[in-house]
Image (tube, rainbow, N blue to C red):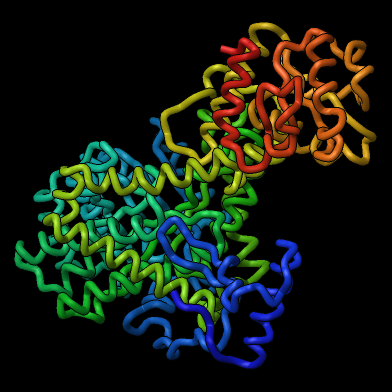
Length: 612
């Protein structure tokens, strides 16, 4: 991506940036290159460059109005509430059908306006008893029971019509039957056969109600660690496979496209998520255009807040994450949004919190945005932003490139079978995991500002197979919790100050925060000199020396010796190795500094402390 080249005072800005960077690097501003500002360019995991400044030079032609091809600014708003998008509530039948129906009606009375149901075929009618289907869209998650669930739902629609349900406009009844055979194959979930789903879709396309059979589910790729461009590409590739199968069965391109909806993950990366939903519509509109039915390319999007971004540690922070994600999905133009409860990553939820509270907070997160902030009263509020428009186009281009790679392999099913999809996702996942481990992509409450004093998780809530961004740090915390359970105390490290507190506070705070991320307690007795170390130790085998580089140069070697004389077996230094004199007689055993692989360092530390 090229940088901005025109605009008022732009070259003055270049010069100002160069001067600031020169000061930081202790150089003469005259020695800085004109494009020094490019050191401020950030690159996303999809390879998209984010400029530090966007100007009118980045302006693009005005997009068509919402509801018009290519639907970047939003699709058809038929069936959507006036205040924005549908608040979709996830419901699973727990065996008591009557109680589930009561819960459904309560959800609709408390602000939910759409349902996402996992329900056995035999219970469809009972669960939807007294639900006005022309007001509350329903999405089914039927898996292998697609045919049976669909038949029961269609039978219910026919029975209500025969009984005179008062619905004068049958197209106002909106439902997604939820078939996802291609993407379910990637996740390993049981699914209906593609041929069976196509037969259901042909029947659905002939009805007066607004029914879509297939969901192009990008969330399964996101849950495995995919980047945003990959998620969009693979979801579009799945949708394309469904459309081709439907056209082979005799449907027109227009009718086939209208049988597909999308499900995408929304994360706490606000602008990236806004752009993702806009770019997703742009990509699918291009697919529809190539199929000869551009006006049928405005497929609805169901946003689900990302399970991968949710933390098990300090789960209250998840409320902030899901708020940002819901905001981004709504602003980005999703037609329905499901916010997961803040404790969804914990098996069975948080022990001290009721299910009703967690679900109410999730629902109210959206209601606050819609009813109090009036967020949905403006369609595509990010439209026209130089940054968002640029990011939208760049993300769509990256997704289109990935989609072409899948098509070159013969389609998504073939690419999944060959392993190329999993390999491509693994590359992005490994990059993200490395950034998280080095704490350049911080996770609040997990890798940064962890709360070591929160109640430990019991054994049933530790571990888990699902991918989560902070799982490597949480695994370390699990080891600490098991140690606490077995011994009655957490693993502890001594902090040895070298110099007055004004000098040591920064590094003491850094080290304590770092150690807590691995479940290690940092005991700080407040010592300031080497001759105090012997009396400060309370049995700790490992100590971290905390001071300023200039003091390391003169007193560091003696301080390391004093710690070892006091009985410490392993001495770490707070700071980089280059900050310690190379010719020192006594050197630390390791270094804890900004930019290290914190997961690897903390894992080694726990091993040294005897934590299993």
